Length: 107
Length: 121
Image (cartoon, rainbow over all chains, first blue to last red; front, side, top):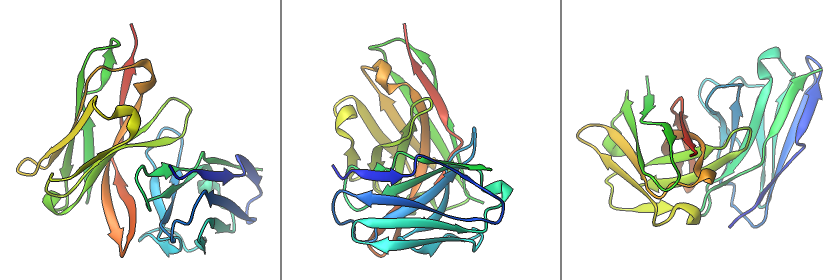
């Protein structure tokens, strides 16, 4: 199985701050990487797919980058509504696997 | 508007069975692969099973293979997950998701609100 190592596990950011979350795959996943946001008690919402493509309706302060085994999600200018848990997903090979998650809070 | 509405969860004893349903609307159900993803309490997300748009292909994680069956009824726009021989480690919120592709990139673009399954005596 492809292991997805996500870091950091938690992060505290000030309003307007730029933050990054990383996911490292145990093998090349050929940009087959998606990012999700999950707010408390809600289902996950797709932010980014194919490593760097922004899902319709997602604010442009969210961006994704990376290739091979290393990927990152950047939020350029933290907003209050960005608090929540963030997960990466590799869809390159069965079984599809998620990162362990990053809890993002407002400082 | 795409909507996925799960039902059928609840409390079940270890070793017993339960069947989840997911009613889809707002898109042409028969054009899309679908999947189930679960999340144990305060834990991360775990892919469970995927079914192709026409039901001809199915895929499972090892821990549920032989116990769970994913199926669909395209005439009813409904996805199912039959869960047999349930274990305590199957306790989780189960999400119905829609598969999407961008080239060779695969991901889940829409998720239901989730249904809780608790396996306990």
